[in-house]
Amino acid sequence: MVKKGIIIEHNKKLFIAIIVLTVLFVLVVFVSYKINKNSFGNECQTDSDCVPASCCHATSCVPSGESPDCSDIFCTQECQSGTLDCNQGSCGCVNGRCSVFFG
Image 1 (cartoon, helix red, strand yellow):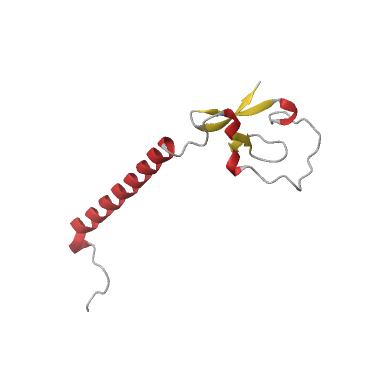
Image 2: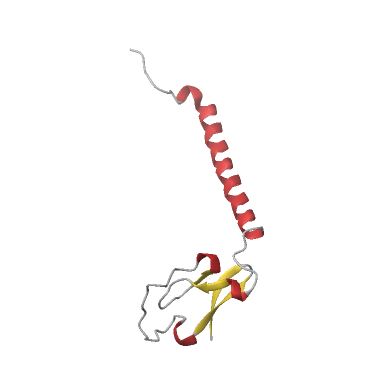
């Protein structure tokens, strides 16, 4: 009887080499993505480049180019703790990333 398909036992070295090369490729892509994002893809340069991430009761900030469309949104006037409501916090730029400042 003839076996069909890939026989890994006869090609163990090739199979291991393919796996190692695939893992290395994924690592190189991941590292280069992180380097490019951190070096060239900064979200912001100044505090004014950052805005709340949601229309109501925002808890995080995003670059102004990613701001949500709040034109048809009505929010409650409640000041929820842990949000940017009622000037409890503000958006700012830290190391090229939009962040929330509470205080």
